[in-house]
Image (tube, rainbow, N blue to C red):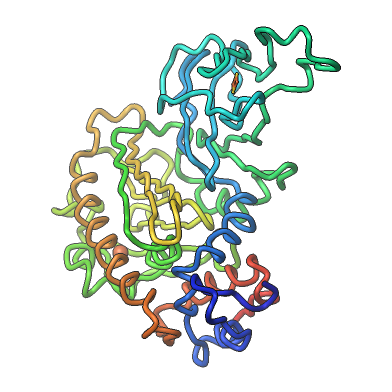
Amino acid sequence: MAGVARTGNGAATIPTSAYRAVDRPLREASTLPGPLFRDPAVYEREMERLFRRSWQCLGREDEFPTPGSFRTVEVAGSGVLVLRNRQGQLKAFHNVCRHRGTRLVEEAEGSDLTRLLCPYHAWVYDLDGRLIGTPHMQDAKEFDRADFGLFPVALETWRGFVFVNLARNPEPLEKALGGLPARTANFPLESLRRTHRVVYEIAANWKLVVQNANECYHCPGVHPQLVKITPYRSGEEDLRTGPVFGGWMDFVDGVRSATLSGETKRTPFPGLSAEDLGRVYYYVLYPANFLSLFPDYATFDWFVPMGPERTRLVFDVYVHRDETDPGADAMEFWEMTNRQDWHICEMAHLGSKTAAYFQGRYSSEEDVVHLVDQYYLKRMGLTKKPRRR
Ligand code: FES
Ligand SMILES: [Fe+2]
């Protein structure tokens, strides 16, 4: 597939000139070719090159309060089991029995794992993934349980956020986070408490959802309430090279938070500067996460592709752990705004996947989308380094 991506029916190809047309200065560039939004072969390549080789945040350390706490999640088509072991360490494993590959744990989450019993033929693993029970295997020649522990998944944490990476030897998380730690240093991220989680199922390719998070060109038409509190051309994007993209937007004078009223009863996070109190920070950690920081709450998105035409999105709202107001007004505001976004992404998917659409052009308001798309093509091995403007 070097330079050419087959479309779903195998009848047509995307010429390399179409990728080169994206990889041009913004004012001359064309947008991503439509077949990239529907082709199962492209999707499989995205899983291999992006989602199985990137750090993805699935939630927070405090979702695993005690030994035996666990969660099962889907990461790039693989079931992953995250748990806290007896020593109190967080661990992640492929949720796959080493006998005949059965999914070990079906429940989405829980707090009472003492061991992992395969429901099929009762092989047993401990919470460190060691195989400790194998009924009727005494006669198997040269079979050593030590060779059949669960496959580990890399796990690291950053300021309370839990990340996993399916790569065998991934780059350290800190390196992957690039400029994000410095840009978020004022915010007490260790002290966040989750108060809401909503899971959305979006009938659109994941790239449309990520593109949407990287521009406010759509805001006047799609988000009449949002543009009343943060004018769509305000602010600046200060992280532009990937894998982290984003920056801030400014509140209208007198607005204190991203709520329908622009008001809030919550105390601002301790440690914020006067500048921070008048801003919203938005950062995409490509390809799977989106962190939004407001003066008094935070939100976090996890984009989970479930096929070329379906994206699951796990959306969390956090407040400071000492804050008594759980942010129902924040959730209300983002429930409305999210649904506006997912609807327009689904409409974009319906059109861009048809044979009628091939490539469009970028507005000057989409400079970060352009950088993101160039970064995507490079990571996919379809172009060379993304060009800076
Ligand atoms: S598949 Fe797990 S014990 Fe057989
Ligand atoms: Fe939006």
